Length: 180
Image (cartoon, rainbow, N blue to C red; front, side, top):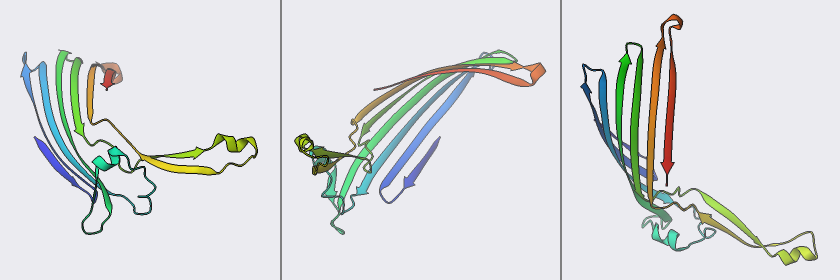
């Protein structure tokens, strides 16, 4: 079992996990299972110099509020992550073993980074027809937007063979991940 907390000025995260294993076949076969949960809260203060510069669309309005003390705009949101892993390890000989595992993580909520923006400059292309210089008509910044649901899968395996004359081990590992 484990758990923890991360406290920062603009971010708070709490997590917990539990895991265990069962041995079979005279401890030559091991089944591993793990489960974890994380709850995170973001409260990032928008710099007052850049507040007017940020494009305030529906996404911004859904995640912003005003700090009652400082009157600053605050981007906020909650995120939850559930993860589980299942693994099987088999000892083949005194010098070799194989392992297989699968994992799944589901994340929901506010997953964007409030400090990442894309800056866009809009220029009238017709201004280039008569001059080498064009004035910038509009400058805007758009906040990073990530989906509010994310599913991640991973499958992996490994073989380990000890080589006695070299006093070393040869490892072959493979991992496949999918992220929607």
